Length: 368
Image (cartoon, rainbow, N blue to C red; front, side):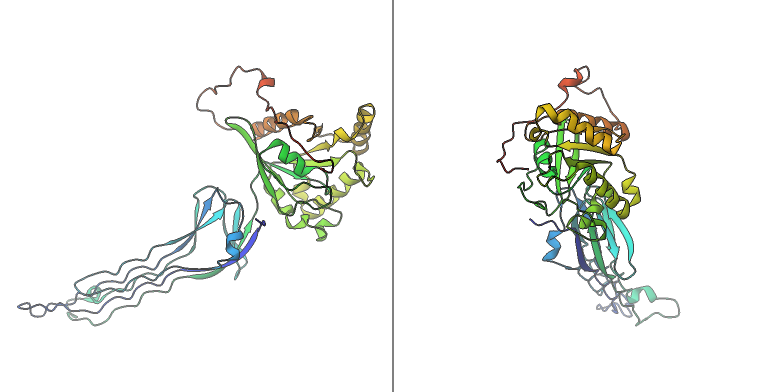
């Protein structure tokens, strides 16, 4: 399914039901008095987070959502029935904008979290409410109030612990498919990734993280060139960035210049994103001869004057993936500690046994 990260919808809450004007009329009960009941409230419209969704694609087919009106009141002090609320399921990471004011109404980040976007109208009052000592036969009632109507812009920013960035064919899709169960498209031509892919890397029960692969970036992305500008915003929610660069690009490009070019794009798009924790991952080490691999790595690291952590991996040969996954998990657990209710079952296990054993992965000769 094509990834959709923006949608415009219209939500309309139900109107409140009108109050009733009625008088008790029973045999042998003269002057029974007013007994008109109140109207019911109109239904409201809510957005609710659903961890099972990862796209706003459903809103391409349905853009109008309207709750039912409340029922009118009736005689014998019968109140009108209130209408049921409408609940619209959205993926986690959805930001809700009111298009009329261009203001953020809220964002959905947790499963089952609810956000009220259109309040239903209140039911009107029946004439029983207007009875008094000086007005024993009131004939007035009030209509129900109108429900709110809003046009909303939904914007999705995927929620992930780790974000991958790099030039097209840097090996991002191959890496995420090797480390997780995600199966993005992999081919030997640029821009095979047209929408973000999410994968869960599980080291063991209770120790896992989510990794996001966005379309490849090119120079000028911050000004709209290529595909990546549409999805750069997804990296804003990640805690750690992995900057992937091909050690042996087929076009003979300089890896150092490629890294520097994307650093300029990050700084132009969002300076805070540029300042975020970012590790360098040198990919496709299997395509460099063993005799020259160390020298090639040293050229890139020294050319960039790289100070942050870096890793050299091959997703095809399964080289360096275990070390990379273990380092990422350790970083996440350090920066986002989780409370432990009891001693985990793996306490005391040697550290090397806690790292994942990645399965074999086949690829075609053109698989990049």
